[in-house]
Image 1: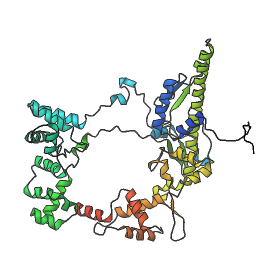
Image 2: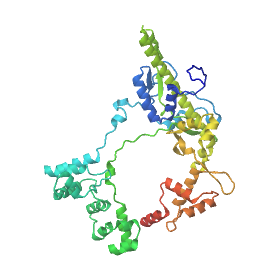
Image 3: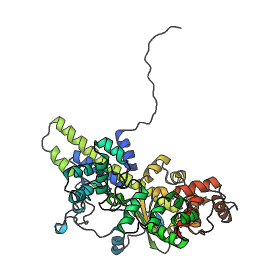
Length: 475
């Protein structure tokens, strides 16, 4: 068989993700905060794009010179798409519209003041507490060793070795640091932190000191041992424990100033009649993109050379395509949301206890979309309902079989049942996981003990042993 080279022509079909399609997929899975950041970057690079201010009233908003806009048209969906509610209801849903720069107030962000950090505040106080420059510098260095909870956990010997200072000098600097507010800063451990706060209240008596020296016994709720060590009766011991619970075990958290991100729901659901609901996009969370077609027309008439014309046309095409992609994103989110609440209608009437099992496959079949598209459309998206604001992912949950042959139960409903059972349990008879399984079986829910433990842990609820100790301390 002879070997040789030859040329063959073959015709095949394949799916290719164009840059535009890749961008559409990326836009769909972004949250509204991330979307606004992306659009701002696009408007900085594209002269034909502008983000209309959503905080302005419709009369004040700049009119788009060339459509399309990012706001989707409304489509009919039976009970879901009733006529718009009165303006008063619209104001209740979205809040009053104000010009952020009116009356010289400036934007909301401009009126925010940055809180001082814990270490900056400690240095400010130390500067007023001592006139010794050497001690002040050493105390300033110790501020960098203080963790976010307000503790200075390293021993004085280690700090002295690292700072090349005498151990007596380090002890003096720590004492200076512990005089700062909030009281409890600079403690080596929880016992010392609480002791500083009790000393300020003149409540650090010998009995309280022995209680602080035996915090592990307190965590185990070993009342007889604590009564014997502290030399007090049960009533006095409970009063001492109540005093400890009123203290702050993490004094540094008072200066935790992480920026808070305002959560804007992407979808709003509200009642329009006795048995009718309306689902619509939240205009406050939906950026309105304006494409300036007149500017593009003016540039093309200004005698540009070939290279400049290609650049202008490319930017304009990118702008119009981005507007269409944003419009499609809104339509997809609205379509998926309507399909979700068509199946979770009982939730709107009765709340989370009426949730039904739902998976991505169900919504994909109802909308004709791929499961991955449904997943992206619900990722980091939130919906405002009469029962609160929830992520769209909240309405998806697996099904748990019924032990009586009835309808299946949503995993989220079972979590709520577990939470309710534990909340209502008798402090003298804390429910174990096995007992919770028995209670759920009485409600017609067939569930394994390990599943109960998994759901309990996902709710942040401690085990029965830990709850029993906690309830004993709370008596």
